[in-house]
Image 1 (tube, helix red, strand yellow):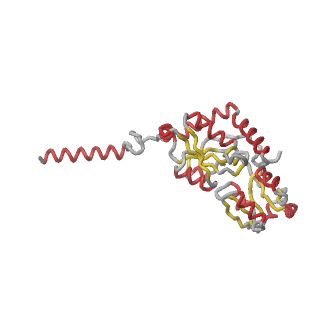
Image 2 (cartoon, helix red, strand yellow):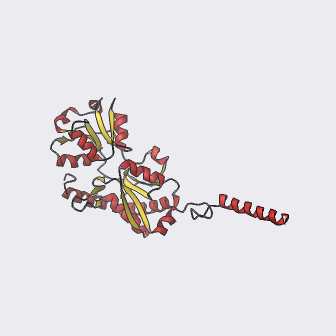
Image 3 (tube, helix red, strand yellow):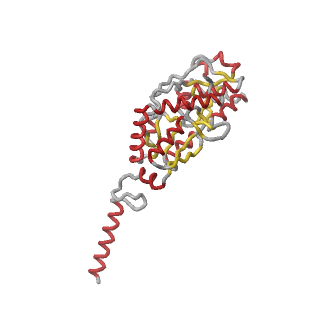
Length: 280
């Protein structure tokens, strides 16, 4: 009896060791490897976080309220290549980053720039949209004040709104002397603060600024541009989603080789212009 009990306990120990070292049932990986791609394939759905307030990349159609844009076409293309459905999750930009980092969504595609601090907490893809002409960055201001803003020093001590977690927030705090950076969740929030005189400007991409200028006579784009150079945009996913990221990079490589993103961007730009979301 004692011999049987000892053998039984040894068996339990071996089983526990195999479970602890060789993967577990919860991640479906017998050898401890990544199966993030297989999970997406098994559920038949790719969830994608988007902040749809950045035409022509991601925006809401004024007639249908549908999320559109070149990034949305890219997300759909990735899902199609995987043979799964696409589910768009709308949220603020800051929440998009958190969703990708925690894995509450499979990916985030929302005009993301590669940043070292982002690469430390989430997995980032290869670049796409490498030759966009939409990367100039500025500060949207009231038309009556536009003439006084030509260089970064002109904004010294001013209140500048910028979306949390964005390149614009980083540039505002790093390039504007003694600035009071006001965090916002959505671009519309910042524009409302600007029009109410509660901030002096809103940091944003030039074409996004132009979309507001086209709709509000009291707003303008000054001569000022941030010192900024962009290599392209990236897709974000949870750290450790290696197999999913590898497949996404493979798909992005094909998109680049076929020149697809430039085509999608041109089409999204024309559509956004037709709705008055961008100037022609």
